[in-house]
Length: 208
Image (tube, rainbow, N blue to C red; front, side, top):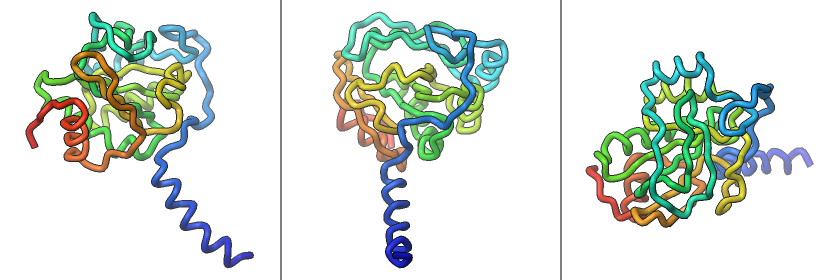
């Protein structure tokens, strides 16, 4: 029996690494202020606004077009206008992450590079998903150099849309016509991999 358990342990670890992060955040104390946009976690406080400004995170986008994303408004992480997902303009790359997710931390710089090098060809938006500690999320953004707009979904209101909720990290791709062309749960291991995914799914060509 002991030998069988020893043989099984590496398999379990390998499966965990391949699966990325689970869909449930670690247990934490949740805010009680009501927050912004109907969430139970306050993601817009004076302290969070200060953190956001220090990180240099760009303002959350205003929407104008209709797309296939759910008709859901999420608060801007660290203050600012709330974002109606169903009115965001494509081409759009949405990065689902959380500060408690190890693989998310590793891939955030690739999304930042995509944001920097897209030169207006597409938009990048981060969703801090199932994360009840917005201060740590903003700290992570600063540590990894993220400046693209971030919204918060601490209660998992996106859960169930095209399989969202199975785990993190995740990426949602919306083309220029507003069609959701892909929802994937994967660990992006390089900028080249992310660029290839964008070029294949959104037909937006970027520099290497």
